[in-house]
Image (cartoon, rainbow, N blue to C red; front, side, top):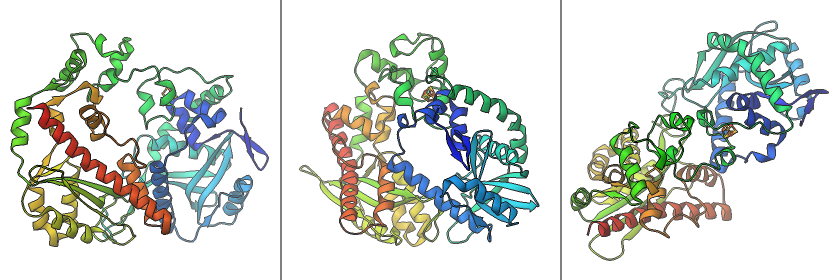
Length: 489
Ligand code: SF4
């Protein structure tokens, strides 16, 4: 058991470990006793944390004149919090409390009177979620255990209707007092169960289950799911009853009983698996591809969704394109490549829209992969009304390549997920994203956010990585398109 101490008082649990423990005893055991087994957050996750810190700082501005309890020196955080409580400050931020071997930091403590306080938890989500209730309840438990009285508990979260700058409030509060009080009796027994689990000699063996992804994917899935084959019942697209099959001991696709109720797509997926080949409607694909008008543009955006909108007319978490890549095919020969990448903190939208509309001309089909590009274009037109007519004309030329793999080309080797990263290596073996520094959109967003704060060599390196990544996305679409043409010959 790894124990820590604050002001000489030992503890080994925290709010985040309590949340781990609610998800799974094995997870909290590892978080407490074997923290090195839990992979550190990746760059994309760190970007989400950074956005959370920005939201937290904005929340503090809504409760002005308070005392911020700095994290360091950690060893005296409860003592410094106590001093702030005794100082009669109206608001205390990041207040630290320790009770029952558990430490919590409260985002905002709002004094009602004397030692009676409201607890305000700040989240970057756009609504109250189920997991926020135990999060607030454990804070109330520890704060009250440490000698204060809690009046009400609130969640402060992002208002998705807010429009920058200043149309409405960016952060809104929800009173969760009733829900937290209803949950409160569960705290003591669940803490006791977690403590027992953490005192075991070895991590408890746990069966996998829906809890592995609730409220989020567990960081230990690489361990606990290692016996699940690459293709299993968990790959059946949009199949809601997989845990019912699992509980009957069925994991392999070959073992699914014939009587299992499946929709057309799910049945076709299983058929493809059993035949070991794709199920293709060649005529339908031919009809679709014949409808494309040259020049054919293959378009991909990279976007960033700021929790705190940065530019006029933007809403929170609105996907803001900062980069595009286009491959243009006109007749035979190799497609021409064009690209755009914004690389500073200013508003990219007009420069992006001008360059994009110029590159796309006024005729020819524009191929996208999923409806993401359509949504991004619609958002752009909403935020820049002067571009509405021209953007609408572009939207009218869009054609979604993904629809082929939703309707007419089902291959179990896609793993039940028709993303371009899954489809490309099956249709065009050897091609892919293997050597790229950036391999998915979440990381591209995080790297864009990093790049615009950098200069020199580091900025240039990220720039090149982003250009390579976005270019690969449209090259992948070209490769898939050509592979489809060959398949229907
Ligand atoms: S992967 Fe599932 S079983 Fe394993 S520790 Fe996480 S939640 Fe528990």
